[in-house]
Amino acid sequence: MGMLKAILAPTDFSDLSAKGVRYAFRLAKDVVAEVIVINVVVPDESNTVDKGEMARHEKRLDEFVSERAAEAGVELKIGKRTVVGLPYNAIVDCAENEPIDLIVMSSHGRSGLWRMLIGSVTDKILRGAPCPVLVVPLDKES
Image (cartoon, rainbow, N blue to C red; front, side, top):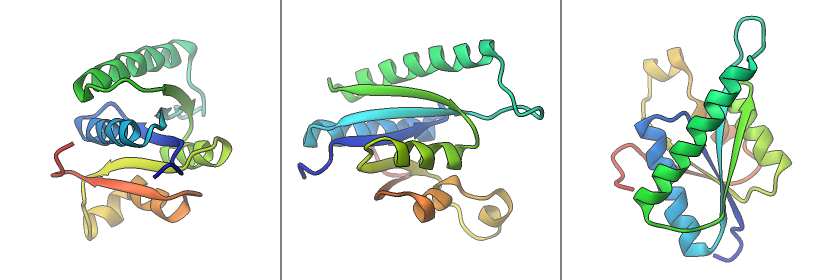
């Protein structure tokens, strides 16, 4: 598995996304890869995000990554990105513009009407990502 050098792990700071990030950390340790944890800040109606909001997300991402790395009990190279945009677009853009070999993310596993009404970032990423995507199911212990 030496072909994995960089793994992208999206987070919205939820417990669900934390499972995906922890899984990415453990996988990266096994294959000696870097993990880039990305958090997407969705702009307001005027299509902007104020500097204070960005600073809060960056601080929260630092704390989130430190806590997840401690929980996973691994030491590895971790990059952090806080970007503005819509989650699907920002995650795919990051995977296209950086040397990402794999995206690891969690999913609720919802389907049917719920998915049609709400939409699925995971589903969109599966269809539009420029690299393989590993989806960690909700009930998978990571």
